[in-house]
Picture 1 (spheres, rainbow, N blue to C red):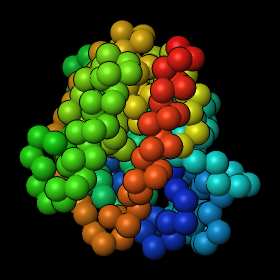
Picture 2: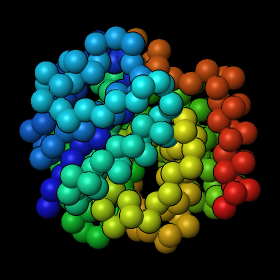
Picture 3: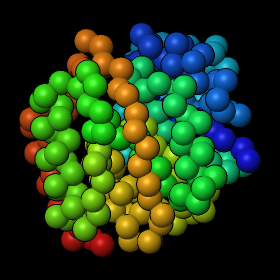
Picture 4: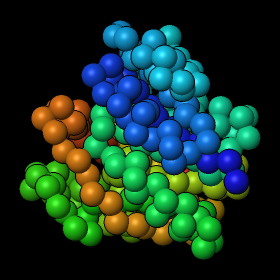
Length: 221
């Protein structure tokens, strides 16, 4: 079983090397989608041994994940693990995702809401809003719909269609799992919050834009 870690990255020169070094021991290959970074993200990722695909301009998280999924399948992935590039995910938890896949899961979501350890209250509120939005629009409930720590089998990726380009992709992936009746399970994770990773969150206005795009995505289904 070939396991590939997919890490979308936009201006993550501060953390990308450490993230890749901590992840490499748990997977067979590292893919970084450099989403139009203006810093040294691309160079550092290559130096760390990752296979790098670059967008000429910043296209957004959804576009980066779509590019990464296509490349991972092309490179023979059986399982794709997505992690954030800002260091908030612990690669030591990857075996829990693989175990869930081995037991029959098609899609695995890492949830921070089981323990909420170290999770700021405003992030918890945002997660609940995201969960409710995902359920109301798509009829799919998970406890951490906005989690970037996920695992997918190649069979799941062959069915999932990504049509959104930015942050709304998190809810879209859950909606697609529901639409194709994929076996989605959750595993508890602990997020590693730093001032740096907290600065990467969505603003209120970005959240509103995300909601509007999700409504449009629902209409398209």
